[in-house]
Amino acid sequence: MKIAGERDEELAKAKEEGKEEELGLMHGIPFSVKDLINQKGFLSTVGCAYLCNDFAKEDSVIVK
Image 1 (cartoon, rainbow, N blue to C red):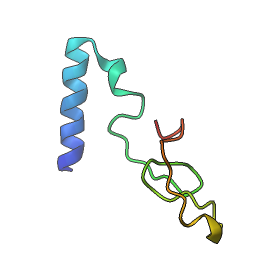
Image 2: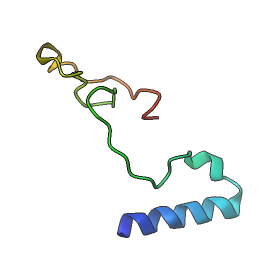
Image 3: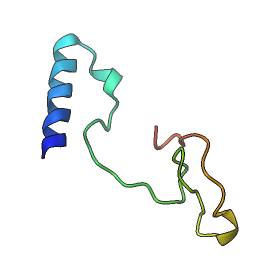
Image 4: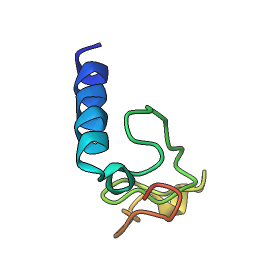
């Protein structure tokens, strides 16, 4: 609830300053990312054991 309140405040401030687009469409909305999608610093195994040492170097478009 604390984090949600902080995100609401960020959004309100951005609206006042006319910078709402800078926050992104999903700002403040929690979501999970499976290991099928690259997320920087995390394993992207796609369910394959041989990829267990392959840490993503950058975020995929959907994560960004």
